[in-house]
Amino acid sequence: MSFVVSRANGWEIRESVSTERGPRSRTLATFKRLDRATLEHAAGRASKPIDRERLISAALRAGAPVEVSPADAHAGALIRALDRGDVPRPALRRLLVGYLTDERASSDAATGAAAWLGASAADRGAALVDLLRLGDAIPAGRRSSRSSFPGFGRAP
Image (tube, rainbow, N blue to C red; front, top):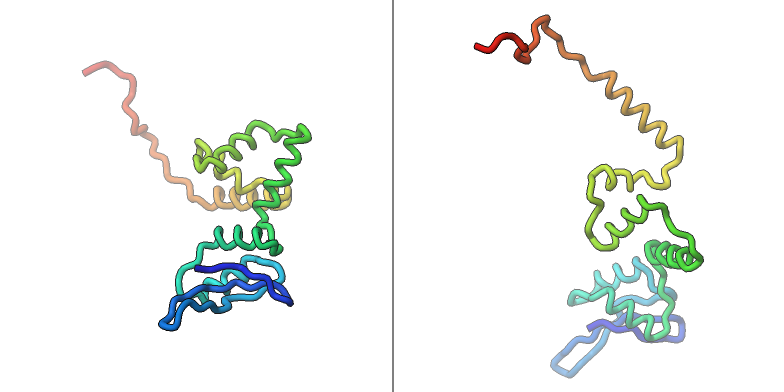
């Protein structure tokens, strides 16, 4: 079991283990601010798999500073904006609800468009130029003078 303790120079992630002489603990990582790299380091040194979410909760309960993930920071900003009455346009709302409920957008086009949110006009223009060049590079097939589709002549 992993836990967080305060030390004079910061914080430690420690692990409890049972030995013949009784329970012992050893330091997995030391930190000033708990971040992803510290969790990775601790997981690499642990003798048993660690539950990162429980470890973050333990750090917060102990009063240790925890680095906020980018998703949490953006979620907080969105919640503050919604509280002020700022509402995203309907297409973005549908995408957001789909991602938050793990029910991705109903169409592949909408999901593909999510990758372009926030892209600059220069990036979008470069992608369009690439797409047009690809279309020009595809060879046109030969057309015969006779249509392969049956005509509207007399019935047999």
